Length: 481
Image (cartoon, rainbow, N blue to C red; front, top):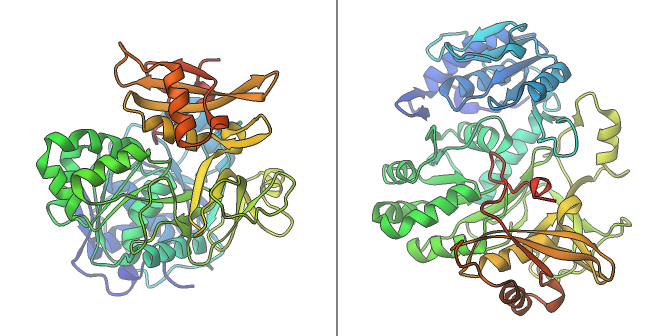
């Protein structure tokens, strides 16, 4: 089996690998510390990792993977009930944590292994096992029930990171900066394992801030990963911060993911820096599926083209293929390739339901394809596909249109029953000036002019803020009923 981290297992050097705040490790130091963790966990079926944004989390996960053991990242903000479910479902043989971390009661019955980032363990020439064996068990957000553990094989990590290297021209010379949590795919797989697979470096901010981004990019970092909330804050800070504008302008790559980046934030960043943010599309179960390429057009509102090795199709509700690439015809995204998870842990029925008979994974996301093949996601089937007046409408494009109105700060779009239309379009709006919100008729006309009359909201409801999760995604099920 090929190594996930050749820079660690083939003559590790004194080159910087990880930096979290003032603490850092070279590849040689990381190899030693990860080797010590690997020696402790080798032979254990699964190992939970208390995934704080720290060196200890990165060392713990890397050491576990080097030992051929599956890691289960735990969100430190998980409530007692959710944490109890994840632990009962995954049955870890031990939990890795930073010395001094106070763990909740649900973890006290498990063997605790403190991660020593200065530990020295046996050199690991390569990882045991094969490419199909589990590397991670990452639990989904559980919006439709208890979280499900997606079992991600080693080959999925390798193929996704190599495909991104191709799309983004990502090399060992790149230095990545981000402030993402480390209990999910974006922050952990892309944000930590990605640089280590390339032989490059990651500088983690600990806590995201515009000042931290400016400091690191102006000090030699070449890439920035973030979620829309982070890029929104950068866009807000840019007019008064010439150092931030200089930093973003000098970055080789600005990447946004985990949710759609509003068009107006794209444009504000581009206008202030001359650089465009590129977007990619992935899921816990699939890792990365598509991306705008570094040498491609960074077109706002799109997630680019399928990555190398990934097959992608759009299908109607009856399973028939959507052949049109007209930027209008909506279909569910289905994907197939080596980037996919293998199963939901202990959920054979859910696993079977997630795949078609010929092996395509049903993402539940709906999208359209532009004539040049670019994919534009317009929402989730469960919450964002609105059937109104005989049309199938994606909420995402209406949200982007609303966000182009100068009086709108945030927007979400849902459907609700209508006796005539089947469903009517409802816009939930946070006004830029709460004392003087834009008129609902004005917003409806604004959308109709930009998109089409049948896509205008029939109802506008004003809120002080939209409910969001830790990744900045709008939680539509939490909107007032």
